[in-house]
Amino acid sequence: MSKSVDISGRKFGRLQVLKRAGEKNTHALWEVRCECGKVLIVPYSNLVSGNTTQCKRCYGDTLKVISEEIVKKMLSARADGMTYREIALEFGYPVSTTFNTIKREINSKSKT
View 1 (cartoon, rainbow, N blue to C red):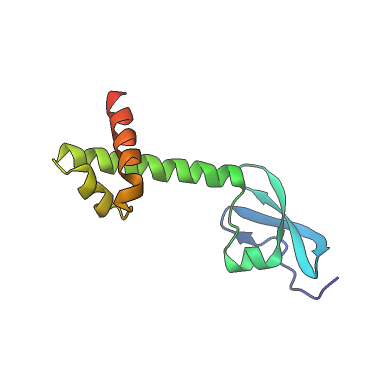
View 2: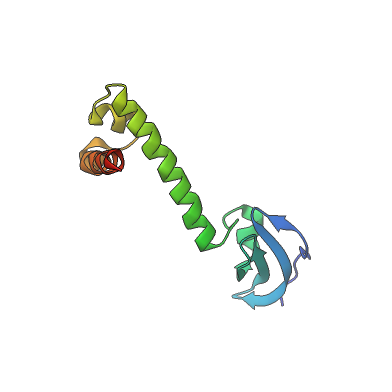
C-alpha cells in the first residue's frame, strides 16, 4: 500500500470517510458514505481535490434542482418580454445549438 494520510472520519462535501479500502494503481482508495446513505469507494486524490463530493444519485438531484431554477429564471425572462435569443445569451448558451432546446423547455414548463 502506498503511504497516505489517514482521513478516516473526515467529511468532503456530502461524503463521510469511513475507512481505507486498499489501492488501485498506487492510488489510495477510501470507503465513504454519502448523506443519502450510499456507500462507495473513492480515490484519495478525488476527495482532497474536490472532484468527488457526492454520489452520482445526489449529483443528479443537484443538477435537477439547478436546471429547474434555470428554467424558472428563463420563464421569468420570457414573461418580461425577452426573446429566446436574448435568454440564450443571458444564460451563456451558444444560440446556434440551444435555441430550440431552450424554446422547448420554456414552452413545456409554461403549459404545466
